[in-house]
Image (cartoon, rainbow, N blue to C red; front, side):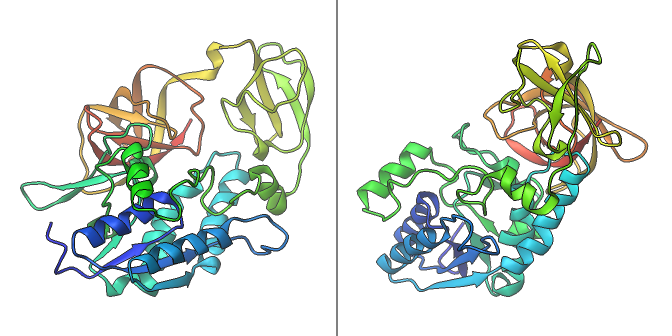
Amino acid sequence: MNLSDKKIALLLSGGVDSSVVLYELVRQGVKPDCFYIKIGPEEQEEWDCSSEEDLEMATAVSHKYGCQLEVIDCHKEYWEQVTTYTMEKVRQGLTPNPDVMCNRLIKFGAFDEKRGHEYDLIATGHYAQTEIDEEGRKWLTTSPDPVKDQTDFLAQIYDWQLKKALFPIGHMMKEEVREIAEREHLAPAHRRDSQGICFLGKINYNDYIRRYLGELPGDVVELETGKKIGQHKGLWFHTIGQRKGLGFGGGPWFVVKKDVHLNILYVSHGYDPATAYSQDFLVRDFHWLTIPVFDKDITFKIRHTSDYFHATMEPQPNGEFTIHSEKPIHGVAPGQFCVIYDAQHHRCYGSGEITI
């Protein structure tokens, strides 16, 4: 793609990836307009947040290449849209992914409404690629770095957002990106990768949930025996497949089921109980990125790992799909996104919400 005749907005996060994106664009003779999206917590003086350092880093990198940096405040949109989505799903006993919705609603959504609509392309530091087929359709494709690939986080964006998306480092390995950052003396070169939810910074996820939902104690019951072994402080602090931080003696324990109506958390004893695995599960509200593709043989993932699983995808009359995995998968949780790829896990077709 010839970028010289395109008007490009670059979302600078203050991290190493988007900083190298700026270097790459400038190296190609393109000087984008840079933007920092502010989506931090409501009371930053109370909650330890890294957003101030992020902005300092983004400012340093943009000035290095003679680009202005504009701060776009999407705080209100984030808390009204992404937080509402997250808390409602958590309240229902589901396992949502706020980062997935942040890409759809904020980075390629609210930002586009505020400033992005003035640009041909919106560039980010995501590890993902795109390709154009013979009919001119744009597809989301995976990064060669299996550990850093972020197509799963992008699998809910709209087709018009994908058409505007530009991923200048998507063809690189993480090591290569860091080498460029060090060689070019970019300010964030030695910063660690961000972990967890995009806006929380150093905030604990359970503290975040407690802030909005409080606590709702209930029984913890061993699934096989029906024996009560303790109490939980709220189903929303636990996810299916969880094995750490449960705090019950005689472990290890696995979270295998939630009964939201009775407020019971079911756990199973032993290191690898069969009850922690699923091989067939339903996916609803499937979102196709480009066009519906009804390949029988697909690959999929249900969490952000480098693992892809082979499966078949069976359409149901109500618009849902049944995923028939070749082998049992650990920790399949309602509310998670099941991200679907072609059999070679090259093209990402889209994603839907797991329901069991």
